Amino acid sequence: MNKKGFAVTGIIYSILILFLILVFSVLSILGSRKLVLDKLKNDVANKLNNEVEAPTIIYKDAILDGNDPVLDNGLIPVVYDVDKWVVADVSKAWYDYTSKQWANAIIVNANKKADYIAGTAVLEEDVLAYMVWVPRYEYHFDTNKIGTDKNKPGAIDIKFTKSSTATSGYIMHPAFTFDNKQLNGLWVGKFETTGTVEKPTIKPNNVSLTNQNVSTQFNTAQIFNTYGLTNADSHMMKNTEWGAVAYLTQSIYGRCVSETSCEEVTINNINTDMASSYAGSITGCAGDTVSAGMVRSATCPDTNKYQTLKGMKASTTGNITGIYDMSGGTYEYVMGNFNKTIGNSGFSGMPAAKYFDLYTISTSINGDATNAENTNGFYGDDANFTNVDKPWFMRGGNYAYFGIAGIFAFYNYTGEGYGNFGFRITFTNLTLK
Image (cartoon, rainbow, N blue to C red; front, side, top):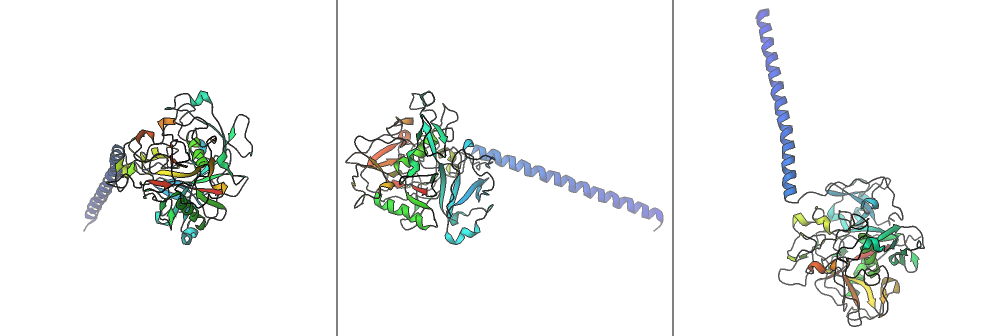
């Protein structure tokens, strides 16, 4: 082949190579655009079906203006990242109560604990319990903020504090005194108690543990002390401890969007029994509306699970960092008792005084979210005080309570167990002030 032939051949090859490069470039651009379009299409579909994953939480470099979470050796700090829980790096800000981002922690099976270092994704099968930190605070009822309409109450004025005495005009919440000692805060079960009598858990999307009388619930709660906790006292939630969560929820750190405007916690309206009204609920589930009617289902709809935008409406913060099942779900027995009356609780004698709140015909306790500070009837919630015939408090209403279930609801009963009576766990960390 002569030089002219080589030149022509070279030109042809060059044109061919340029053509191939052009084709691959076009295909690459089209492929990229297809991915973008597919994502947009999926986002639109998800929004239409309300199946949007919970957003990534951005934790600000802010320190709580009071008592930071006390991490017992058995507790692992976690944050929610896009679609999963991961172990928090505690050298960085991993909670921010001013932005309604409450601190969360987990307990895992003992043989798995060493695997959970900062940044590790949490495997649901390893988790025994999810807990949320309620920091020590003092509070004040400002009538200009609370207002007079109980159906639309405003914010309770809350100040986080490290002091053992309250500021003038404020009340130190009684839940932060345990066994005559001052506490930094409380770890509260994120969901109603789940699992079994022998191995209780605190997990989402599980059937709540029911059909126990109060004494059995009390004993079951203390099993968590065998799960690797070294400095905490695990016990059945007291009535004042429920009140501590309720008051924090009814503040600018919880469900209040301003000092005078607050959102009600959405009901968990799932009844797991297809025929009976005496059954457990599915933890972490939310109704379609604040006071939705009961739904009989063995599972929580995907669009209503705790990590969805609709599901988060059932938390104390309106986001995934809050506490769930405090409106509806099952009735929750708490350790609040009338005049040391055992009733049908199963106790042979009352437990140690530190584990229950005592009421008489003339007593009401500040901070318990019942009658003392006129919070009874907030949001139209049910309000029935204990008495000698029904000496035990229950809180939150249940899945069939529609508009009268809620975080301020309280009820009385004998202490016996039923299929729709559950309970909640509190860890009183004994790293004391």
